[in-house]
Length: 233
Image (cartoon, rainbow, N blue to C red; front, top):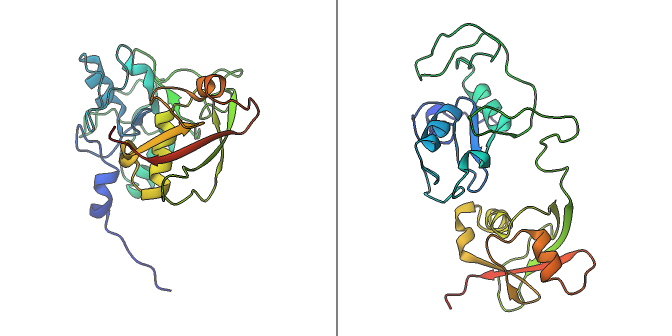
């Protein structure tokens, strides 16, 4: 089978920063909506008393939005592979203060080999990892086992993998976005779904530790979660 070549211009929208329109540098993702920006751009934006995503306008956090953005190594590696000549930001220990055409600092050094999402502290700097609490997608959190399936009242297709293990701190909104991506290949359609446990509608900000304690009557895993189209009632 012959290889199909894809033009970089066709991919630019997906690897560019919505704020500066340039290729992503130090790609930083908002945890709530998963939109990605240059670190300098999103930190500057949030430091100007903004608390919503500049792309979708969803509230990141009412008072501490900078604590809910994370360095996205996977996205940045994709950008560097697609745009190999892109100048990388200088290392924090490098005294060279040259700036590239996008307004980001240059560096001759190689980027970190870490594939982890690193939280950004309130000063906009990547938080340091500790040996006791590595930031590996919340794998060190208490985990919750879920059985996720369609509600009997609807005809939505079932997920291929019904058993899901995730952080107890993950919220109902996070799971709705995952289901929307699997069902519709469009994470933004999560608002079209309702999640229920024992036929009780779950609040969008409830985490699954709360759900397992307050809604799951069986008190043994997995917690059964059902989904259906959102009701207008």
